[in-house]
Image 1 (cartoon, rainbow, N blue to C red):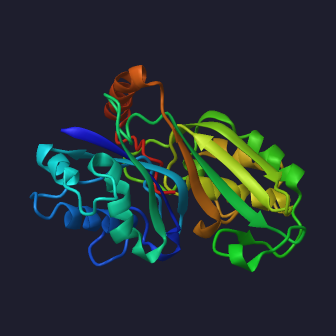
Image 2 (image 1 turned 45 degrees about the vertical axis):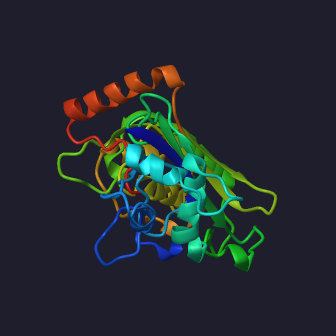
Length: 294
């Protein structure tokens, strides 16, 4: 089998998340339907493994997935449909985009042969998200309304940044996660900061080894409450250390959230990373190293 890496982007607004679900339109479902069409002469279609299973309404500009192709799949890709177009693995992104990307809300940026040991999910060392808020001090562009949260009043960005940075490090983030039976909520929050872009839009940059279910949107919600003066700057840490869900802040909507990048180690460290991640899952229970349906 030959492992293929896919780098892709999508507008999550019309998808019921990443993971395939019967009767619902999902990113994985659309792409695997396209794969089944492409390889209809070969037999069983390949399945996708993704770096971060994004939830309903969450977008991506830097998502990564992989699939495994056998000799028959690769031979089928070598058959030219048109003489002026590439064949082989180089043609896979174009063919997927011609079927799954026809609606324009998912796009495979590239398909490449993955290095030995690569696993989109288990080899990842971090995932980075961004969350965008247009408050009363920002330019509100209606063309971006599907990718930003509009807040009616001006927010204190310094208070939000201070609250965010106070949460960094290895901790139990149960207070910011939707519970899953038996799953660990211990995560390393590597980066969390707020700044305004050129239009004054508040942008959170959040990076961790992995995320629990709804963790990023809960973290953003706590900072928004701090920026609005409803939560003291030190309160997010107190809530984190309490390790219990709270109603002191609201989890923000998905539409402002985008998965922007997935980090991997050097090629010669990929196999070791996969082994460590799988071992951690076995030791700590069902550790979810895939971005956590955020």
